[in-house]
Image 1: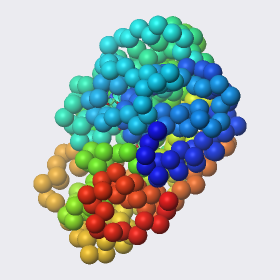
Image 2: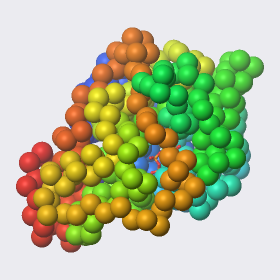
Image 3: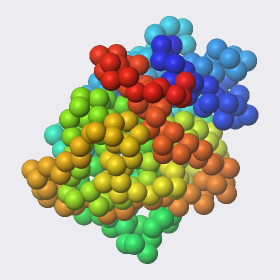
Amino acid sequence: MSSSKVIQHDLNTIADSIAPLAQKLSGKTLLISGGAGFLGNYFIGAIDHLNRHTLSKPCRVISIDNFSTGIKYRVEEGPNFKAIKHNIKEPIQIDEDVDYIIHAAGIASPKFYRELKIETIDVATLGTKNMLGLAKEKKAKSMLYFSSSEVYGDPDPRHIPTPETYHGAVSCTGPRANYDESKRLGETYCVAYFETHNVPVKMVRPFNVYGPGMRLDDYRVIPNFIASILKGTPLPVYGGGNSKRTFCYITDAINGFFRVLLSEHHGHPFNVGNDQNEITMKQLAEIIVELFDSNAKIDEPPGLNDAYSQADPKRRCPDLTKMRTLLKYEPKVDLRTGLKRFMDWAIEAHPEYAKKAYPLTIV
Ligand SMILES: NC(=O)c1ccc[n+]([C@@H]2O[C@H](COP(=O)([O-])OP(=O)(O)OC[C@H]3O[C@@H](n4cnc5c(N)ncnc54)[C@H](O)[C@@H]3O)[C@@H](O)[C@H]2O)c1
């Protein structure tokens, strides 16, 4: 169980938001890949919370992670939680029944997928094929594949907000192609396994999910800016800071992911995110300065204005009509509240920074 008050509060929120659906997990076994990562740890924490407070019979969780970018688990191993160290690009044998599968393993941060180019492709393609094979063998009730909003590439402005029906504008050789194209092929595998073997798989395309538990050194934009505030260094805004994004707080995202996993929409992709507050990276930096340290500086380092930065999608905003209509999903946490929760957690988790004494108002 996490010792963080912010995370405990989040797990409570998630459990409440999926309470009516959650009984489907009672007495079942759920296998997750990438359980030691940001999203994986929230899934495992949410099920641990449901086991303690909601489910009539506990849900057993098996996690597979090779720790290529994950840090550690927040739930300890025991009768309801087993952790396996394994690279999911290799097949794996599981000697017990599995009812649900979540394939969340991936190299999610640009910092790492630029370094681990081939591993990034392998986990989204070979890893997905291996997990689909397991879902077929175990006759799983449902499988969830973590694709990405990056499958849309740099969308034509006429398709923003972007619906699931948009096919994307993606380079197969550009600096982001190893991530974007492998996520796309992962989805193609999912549809092929559904159509050929009737594997009840669904795909989620998350749009910039953030929250407690992200590595402060993983260079995704929110942890990067928050880490700068904590260290007292300027917030680095790359490539002019004009790219626009929407951000989805973790409790809303996990609620959406569970809704998809526990649905009957086999073979379907779903956007999961927050369609409010589409902002530029410069505006995001300004909000973070305003919230946490009005003396902090914003910097525009020249060095990173490279091919990768130039390939940065200009806008990213989900059309959530499908999630709202079919799964009654509604994101609730506004950006400022989510950022404050992130900062509260960052100080809980890194007490060396507590001396900066931000007003911790959320928990
Ligand atoms: N967080 C987001 O905003 C976001 C957005 C779009 C897509 N996604 C996707 O969601 C999934 C989870 O993202 P996250 O933010 O939790 O990332 P994360 O980096 O925090 O976690 C990913 C986990 O997968 C593990 N992993 C990587 N390669 C592996 C392999 N070959 N075998 C076994 N384990 C492996 C890592 O060690 C890590 O623990 C990823 O597939 C990511 O691409 C996330």
